[in-house]
Image 1 (cartoon, one colour):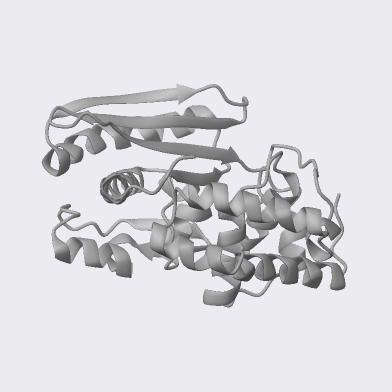
Image 2: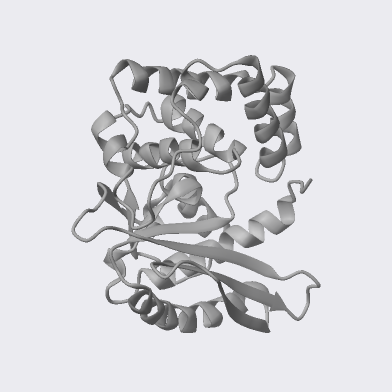
Length: 285
């Protein structure tokens, strides 16, 4: 089981911000819509580390690659004053024809450990876009703190990040919990953050629309009652997923607090969410 590593995480998060800054400086980048756990982390006060930069987009993979090419020229230059001279590579991973997945890797000469940031771009059905908000990178509280502390040293990082609204991110989490082959504890944590900290109201119409928004066909592996009326076996599966997954994304002392009560707040937030969806008549395709 991988564990939380504070020093690596601090460096990886700076690398994420450098990539975001350079990406949204490119022409056409407004069609890249930031979402997921890292969007929660930077744009909506998320407390857990997230290793991926996730986007949805109506663009074809070739158009995304063109934007990436321009962005990564800047990324390589900006990484050096932060981490020193090193080897920079972009590694594209096998993916579906309508999606793109790649890793931006940087191995500083002064470090044995490389920095690696995964970027994932999921294709949207034509003319169907999620609700979104614009955020000025330098104005985000956590980013502003890193700028003031001297950790994020980019002149005028005033790029505008296009991000899904919290309600859209919540609908993504519903889809993920229903369709992932294996449960991921990060999804339950993010549901808790969205519902309890951000007070995000679930919108059944948004959730049902999310089932048909992406080019990848939705296939349910769990039904609503798996969460809404969870059995002891189902709750055990969720607790195990949380413990295995969140050890990488939360400091040990924080994880220990939640372990002590059996991750009750994460389970309760998810069970109440699905109970509400069931009460409101949500239907799977």
